[in-house]
Amino acid sequence: MLYFYAMDKKLIDESRKYLMNTYNRAPIVLRKGRGMKVWDTTGKEYLDFIGGVAVNCLGHCHPKVVVAIQKQAQRLIHVSNLYHIEPQIKLAKLLVEHSFADKAFFCNSGAEAIEGAIKLARKYSKEHGSSNKYEMITAVGSFHGRTLAALSATGQEKFQKGFEPLVPGFKYVPFNDTDALKKAITTDTCAVMLEPIQGEGGIKMPSEDYLKNVREICNENKLLLIFDEIQTGMGRTGKLFAYEHFNIEPDIMTLAKGLGGGFPIGALLAKESVASSFQPGTHASTFGGNPLACAAATAAIETLLEDGFILDNCRRIGKYFRDGLERLKGDFPSFIIEVRGLGLMLGMELTKAGGPIVDACQSRGMLINCTSGNVLRFTPPLIVVEKEIDHLIDMLEDIFGRQL
Ligand SMILES: *Cc1c(COP(=O)(O)O)cnc(C)c1O
Image 1 (tube, protein in one colour):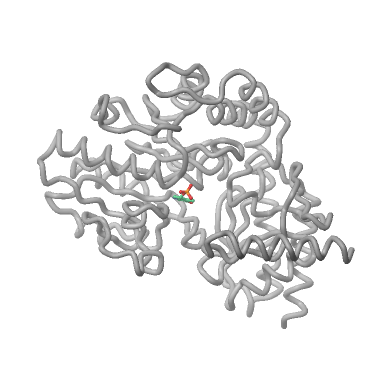
Image 2 (cartoon, helix red, strand yellow):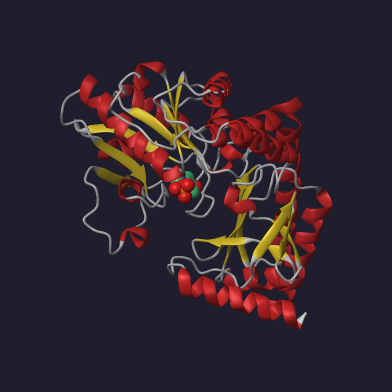
């Protein structure tokens, strides 16, 4: 064990020496994963309730995704978008057939999908409204990514500090407040962009009818509605896309995180009337929609949709998980403020900082996440089973018990 520990320390020292200091990384080096489990370089096993932060929807190294990547890697890894690409066509068709959208554009990350959505909304609105129609309204507490326009769209000052001047044209209104939204609309407004459930902001749920009312406000004012489903998409909430829970459709939707089953890929989906504002030369990405990424994403979606089994599991297990968290709240009312979320996108707001709970879980072989300082966030693979949930709930119960 000492030898392994020494090896870890060397790797961690080198990590700190050679990588920019942009993450508060846990002092473990992860090497291998299968399903719900990951192992570090000392051989210690962990149950992964973070799932790459809502990325590994099928668990780690799902055989169908692995095989799809292997096969595609042997055939063709990259060619330019100057040509038609089979796996890209297949993926676009799959997404269009299972969503509100008519067209897809592929990129490599969430932030890049947001950039595309902002550009598309501006271009469409200038063409169909006026040359001044470029303002976008987003929500306080939202998170849309780290590139400069995505950061400017993000309604949280803490992420923007030090990077000013921001990209102009963004206004923030409180989430779940339709009056504030109506007041913020001017003749320059082109779109409203929302996460159906705020993720990074602390798993904040939309209140009853909020999204439906926003859709109506957008219709009345001829504004595009953009849903950022980068975190809520790909089955996370128990339906393929979160908007399906609310009986409405957006005009534009962004995807990334779970889309590739672990492989990096982002997407922008839109109705034909909106998508047609993009023409050759208006938007592009060298790697976007490359054969390898598209093959991985196609395998991930096909697996996700097979017999509806995984989505059913997500809904059923999500409820079981939520009930367990609610029970904990009953046992520790001075510790736990609220349990929130849908499917397997769950949050537990604490009265204190969540960091020590995350650390205590990690030392016991359990990976969980904390967001917004005091919200424990659970985004496990959608294949998680009851006994793994029981294990986590028992562990949290014990940890909370000791902290009282
Ligand atoms: C993670 C996330 C993003 C940013 O995605 P990246 O791939 O990290 O750029 C944007 N929006 C939401 C809702 C997210 O959860």
